[in-house]
Length: 317
Image (cartoon, rainbow, N blue to C red; front, side, top):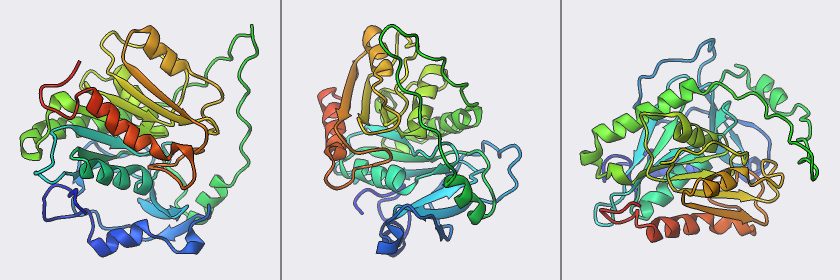
């Protein structure tokens, strides 16, 4: 691993443990939920934001689609992945994995993304934020996950008003975790080689929702750029100083449904926006799945950062 969390001589896990987590047997590459021992996280920094109201179950992990995932998280942490100093750009990204605020896909939407960023000279910080409680038993959690899901409503026909959006979840815990992570990065920016004027945030699915939420609501965080990856596409109220946005989704993602609201909102507000609608990729593809057009989004993201001069000192709009 070239990008190292915190110290050039360290890694989040030993190489053997990291390989075991990110490489699963063929039998584990399907959607079945398999038990997984809680992995060591020796360089995860506890953020000290408290617990979760009503949470009685301990944090546990599972594997699905070959990826390690955690649930019942009641202690938020931040794990830095720092690039080789010889290639460090000073740019940095806070990474928020997804999982419907009930679990976190820490492999394909956290560690792998952070490693890829560090390999490009960009410091990355994986936010393991607090979640809503789920069943303590893995069997009960499997049953919950396999319950029938209603089809999403179709987009309104021409001339019809869109139905009101569902009530928003309370994301105060998650916002507090993100703000604590931001403050920690700021306090150690010199040590970690981070230019706070070039610190942005990207998130996946629910993590994209958290990214958008703090962008629109937090007074403690001022991301230089944001990257909601396969997040909600509904319209939002965009502040005058909203950061440049890089937005990615696939047309076969259940969250898309032909909507362009958030992109249109950024455009109408006169804020920089780049939007990639891929033909296929589904939902939850992380860095990408084989034979899908969405596989190249990460290269496009780094190119976007480069063109917008976030990878060089003194950049910004």
